[in-house]
View: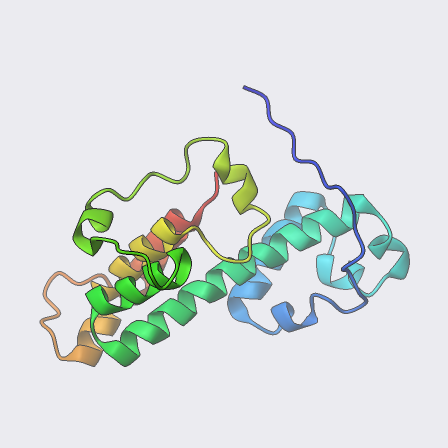
Length: 178
């Protein structure tokens, strides 16, 4: 199967659009990875009006920034879990926010049947999304809930809990689009 990604237009770019991401560790890492992929410095290019007028520069930059935004959403989910200290309640709130407040969803059934979101054509659309697909967010939150960082916060047993690096590596794997 061959796939093509079509960019119907531009116009949302502006000089310095990568600066905020460059000040964040995860954002900077995403920009460095994308810069290596396109063979140029995205942050520097975001200060070049001529580069900002080209699809060849802008679209990879936007994809990198969207990847950072998806990672940032995971941080927000973690903050919600830290506040509630209840994985089930946090996931229920995420599902209701995503599917609608009136949605009647059996959370246990939903969690038992989380799909593999890296299969199928839908993964191409995720490249342009600011939020990861809900199943990925839930899986990432489950990993965080089992991490030594979260376990320590809640006073739970640390036996067998993944350290922060291990948990972040697992979450990075979950968030991959391809």
